[in-house]
Image (cartoon, rainbow, N blue to C red; front, top):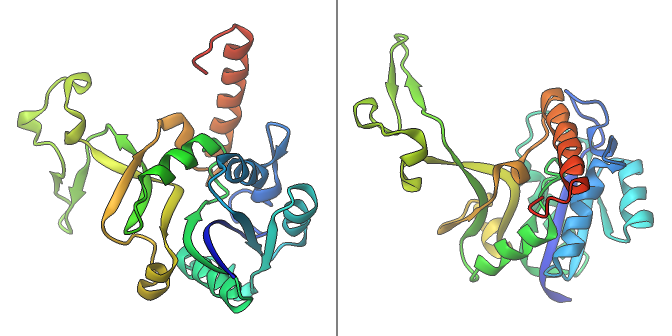
Length: 239
């Protein structure tokens, strides 16, 4: 069966820095549920699939959220496996089962504050070629370190720096959020990666692009939820 667009979420059961991270409760629901809800709320995905080696995640996906599930082999959930390999395996499993998507929206489960609105806006930028990549402007100065220990500015020459707030947006590096990738399935399977040219940036606010990899990131997520709740209670419509 040919289909236009699917969302694909790959999530392993084990995690190194935060035990059982993908099912750990954040703001009253398991971390991975935030991403499943966003995919559904975007209304641009005809189907949503979760690929995992975890029975608990499969239960959440199928019984709680009503999304499709795929099984991942243990070999693809080990540390050091490139995520593109995992997503490529999942796509091939779908195609082998006679579901042939044209476009895939790759959503990492570690980005809870990416919403359906963000996904829909990113999808609107996709014109059938290349990859839409969620990014933020990284307004920091970057230096390259050499083998002899010396360093050199990578972006803005120190002699040309302006006041940070007045520096033009196009002078800063862009930081890949890891939260949204949209690309063609055929091209992805052909190249083996989902950073296919032309790469189209979708700019996200910093707070929405938080990627949870460490206990510190988890603490930040909890603190952001607390702050957001307090502002909503104060009637701040901007949050």
